[in-house]
Structure formats: structure tokens, C-alpha cells
Length: 465
Image (cartoon, one colour):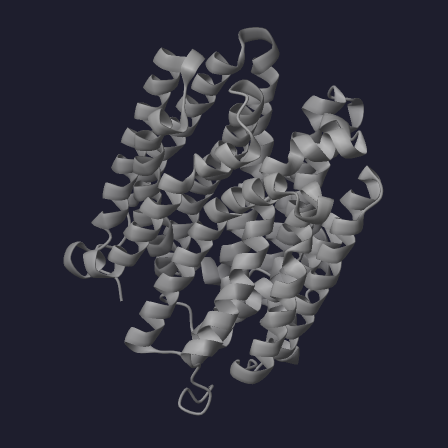
């Protein structure tokens, strides 16, 4: 086992790994506000723009578990440094991309770099903390994850509008370069090296089948509507159930033979992990679908500039932050019922937002949207950080890399799925029924997902370790 005393992580080290956790999530959402200006600059068109979002998300989701496994083998700090350096370089490539296709290629590479860096964060926290310090670090990780998603969109709006030195949308990628350099300097100084005592070998068939499963589901769902649902999209969706079944069977067989598969089914016997994963899926689908659709509505429907579109989400970020800070104390008193309460509050926020949009569409302002957006953020802040902490609470330290990889892969796949499903639903309805009605339908779909998470939360173990 790892000796905790020798490699305990300090405050600066924790800040550094959390910065590494924030960057990939910020970059998944930062492009939402920049899409209109990318479109006009690169003449990209809707299918290409969706590839800019999906190319990153799919590459990231597909390679995450592999990134966790490599960290367990080669050393997590080493992989964190490699991932951070690659993330800085690929961000530079995105920022300098001359054509839409080059941008898509650079985004896929950026997603791969994020997948090297991100799993090391959870694994390092699990390996270098214990007891109350781990609980606190996990709460901070959960808060960072949620805040990054909202902050990405706000930051995107500010950067596009600021048009630093005429860079326009390119600044949303170029801003990562100095941050990555700072992250590298800090990581060399403050992040301890850890690795698994019994690192597992790479599960090649499992990796390939997981990649096939995620690609065959996410790519056609994201591209289908914009491309007019050609034959390949249906063939691809037809492949998905077979690829997913084959993945499960191969992993189960490897598990039974005593090898370490990419996603060990035995890990899913951990009650807290399994129940948490089932909740994270509908939560993340609703969250990312909402963020994508709001960015489109504010800019194209309500004709707000990128700054106003970003600022509309500030109440959400502030409420999320406040809730995630209060979370640990509330859990101490009320246990996992905090998650159920968060679901109810989020539902009320989305319902309020739906009514606001329905009744006052023509002159909607940021101020009128604020109460619903803030309540939604407050509810999310009581759910996500607690769920992340819960899912990892019972995973042994030597499987930290694999466990963290499973959690983040599930979350990231669901985020990509949210843009693909709720985003496509909204964009498909908008031309025929108008922006207001298609937004209302999308919000009601999200509300249904929130109700599902709230009901599932009643099955969570009451007390948290």
C-alpha cells in the first residue's frame, strides 16, 4: 500500500491538481459562447461546429480510463505533467487553427491531452490524503468540477467580446497556454509522485471496445441532425448495442480470470459507486444540454452579445459555489438527503425559468432570468460535489486510478450525450416552432431528468463516510 505520511499532498499541490481538473471541464463548455464567431470566421456551418464540441468530448471520454491506467503504471505526477504540457500545446494549435477541419483535429488532440491529465487528479487525491483531509479535498474537487462548467461559459463570453489583440474566438483556447505553463511549474514543485503498488497491464480489447461503443453512440447523435441523418448515422447507432454488450462481456471475463480489465465489473459491486453513477448520468445530460441551449438562445434568440450571454450564468456560478462550500457541513447533519433536497431545488429553478421564458419572451433580460438560474445552480451545487465524493468513498487506494477513471468517463460521456440529445432536440424544433417554444420543451425534458435524479437519490446510503 501507499504510505500516506511520506507523500501527503500540501495546499499548493492540491491547488495544482484541482487546476488540472478545472482546465478540461472549462474547455468543454468555453466554446459554447464562441461558436457563432467561429462560424462567421471559418465558415464552419452547423455540422462542423458540433464536431468542434463533440470531437473534444468524445476523444476525452474514450481515453480517460486508459489515462488513469497509464498513471497507475508510470507514475501519476509524470502523466499529469505530460498531460498538462500536451494540453497547453494542443490549446495553442486550436487557437492558431487556420481552417474548420484543422480546428476539429486540434480539438480531438486537446481532448486526448485532457484524458491524460484528468484521471491523475482523483488518483493523486485518493493516494495522498485520508480521513477528514480526503473528505475536504473531494468536496473541493466536486466544487471545482461544477464551477468549471459554469465559469467556462462565462469566461468564454468575456474573452470573445474583449477580442484581445484582435484574437476574437481564438483567445478562448490561447488563454490556456500561460495557465498550462504555470500548472507545469507548480506541479514540478508541489505534487508528490504516486503510483499503484500493483499496476495493471493495458486492457487492449477493453479499450478498443469502449472506444467503439462511445464513438458509435456519440458521433451520430451529435452529427446526425446537422448532416441530415445519412445512412452512416443509423449504421453507427446500430453498432452501439453490440459494441457495448461485447465490452461488458470481455470485461467480465477478464475480471473472472483475475486480470484487471479497463472497467472491472467487480468495482461496480461497490454500492456507493454504482448508485452514484446511475444518478450522475441523467444529472450530467441535463446540465450540459442546458448550458449548450442557453448559449444558443441568449445569443441567437435574444440577440445578447457574448458578455451578456456569459453574465446571465453568473448567478448560477455563485449559487453553485455557495452550495458546494456548505455541502460538507450539511452532509454531516442530514446525510445524503442533501442530494434529494438539491434535486428539488434544481427542479424549482428550472420550472421558474420555464415560466419566465414562456410569459416574458420578447423582452427577456439577464435580471429576469437570474432567480431561476440561481436556484438551478444552488440545487446543482448540493448534488454534484456530494455525488462525486460518495462515488469514490469506498474505492480502495490501489484502485484509485481505475475508480476515478470510471467516474470521470461516465460523467464526461453523459456531458457529451447531453449536448447531442437535448442540444439536437432544441435545434431540430427551433425552425418550426420558434426559439421560445423549443426552449420550453428542452427545459421540460431537463426537468424530467432532474425528477429522475431526485427519485434515485432516495436510494443512496443515508450516511457518508
